[in-house]
Length: 313
Image 1 (cartoon, rainbow, N blue to C red):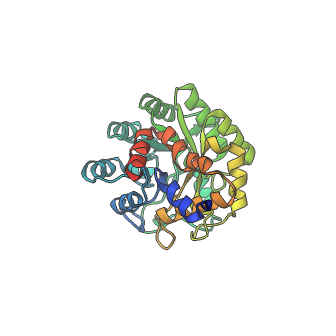
Image 2 (cartoon, rainbow, N blue to C red; image 1 turned 60 degrees about the vertical axis):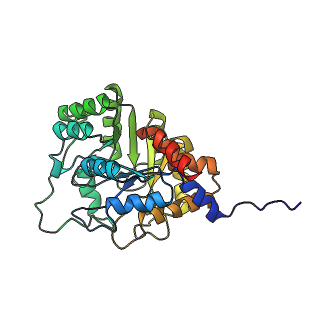
Image 3 (tube, rainbow, N blue to C red; image 1 turned 180 degrees about the vertical axis):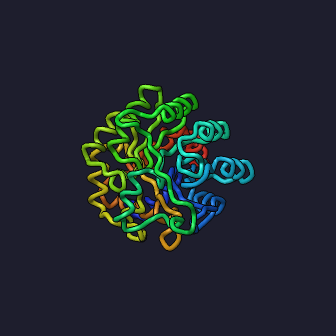
């Protein structure tokens, strides 16, 4: 009897998209033009068998919209969201974080567009947030530290995150700030932490990646910086491999960080990232950790993954 051939890369990508979790997507509506809205994102992700997506907007908490979509659409890809601590929500505003938690919010991103580090980086960046420069009032930098000490209002927010078992995301702080905030977060009982795109904006070294992973943080890589179809691509596949290997597969999460106009969509970009991981030699089990189970563990989405896999089997 003739042996069956090994599955093609296309088949492997398709299977790995079943039960996938994309924890960082820029769908709309937003002050910046977006390629697709949150409902269309859920439809496209569900068509591929995803378990969940997490929408991120730099300017507002997406938790109410996410709840409406989960409650009114029977799709495999459940939509979740959180809050970014930028100027439009009052910066380091514990009231806004508490409201986000009450509404089922899963994640609190530290300042992004309003981080002093982001404003420095933006001066020489190859790309900028498309909502900047449209007549809005100037960004006010938001500090999370007072010298080398974590500010009291930041500590109050860390307590809210800990009490509600939310995810603390590093946002666009400088890595030197991330270390101090994450160390304080651990002292205050925060169990879920993630570092966003260490290879860009935050100025992290591979030693920082190793150390933050050893601390217990997940390291999240934006596939938008790597995949060929993305206008944000600035790194090659080997750079991604070095980053993954520094933290280890068990501490690595891959996200699309897509949804912007004029580039590949988040579902297509995520699939391209899985194909890249296959070509880099990672096994399907390793890729599933980085595209599903690690994020599910971070956010508490295990039941969503189980349900999505049950639907597609």
